[in-house]
Image (cartoon, rainbow, N blue to C red; front, top):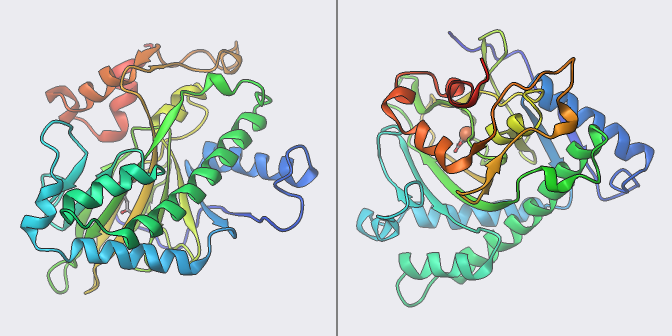
Length: 320
Ligand SMILES: O=C(O)CCC(=O)C(=O)O
Ligand SMILES: [Fe+2]
């Protein structure tokens, strides 16, 4: 189905000025309500967090460009042969326009430093580490605020342990421009497999989201916005009240796209289940409890490959 550029997702502003971020204030409750509605109805929203300066975005993207500009053999030092989806992923089955680097525990300075020491042997790249450590720490802070708001929005503010504990994976993406005059998938349609994701793009759009009625629409975030996505595990925690939205990247025009995301991911052995308070007569349990690793393995299986990505979780853990 084609895309409709008219529709927009909610834009929610988190300002450190004023009292909205004081838990319990009227502003906080309003934000909780808007976050919950956006997660249930759209599965994503645009976030403005004024604690993250625009200069930091510029520095992060300039460090990312420097990384992607390296010759292929330098980038391939970042290939991780033992862990899928970590290190360098170049022009892979994910799409001919796409390359990415994934860095585990991205809000930990030592983890960023080890990554740069593999790519730039011996010397590392302190500029890269400084830009991303500041950015990812601020995004982690925002993640914590959003997680607490989601809990509060269901009256579960003292049940933080009902949400699986996660670490932050940082992924940097680059999409080449398609051949002249063509429109091509940069990243195929999928839902994010973790708890939630915050994405940041560098002014070249391309991100599209599927509405519940199957219509695709383009996101055009402002240059200071981030995009929050509900992942499969948040959907599972909410007993499928929240919507893990199908999204993709479509490339047109002659510009490359750069983006990065912070992905909240649990340990492989974690058990995933709905908060018991969100299961009742009106909302019967939708999914069985499952181990995150078993779910990931399923998503790589033959059976999963034959179906749309956004169907994976229901197919794997759905109670029929
Ligand atoms: O590059 C983008 O904006 C989208 C990336 C994405 O959806 C993902 O990595 O899961
Ligand atoms: Fe995604």
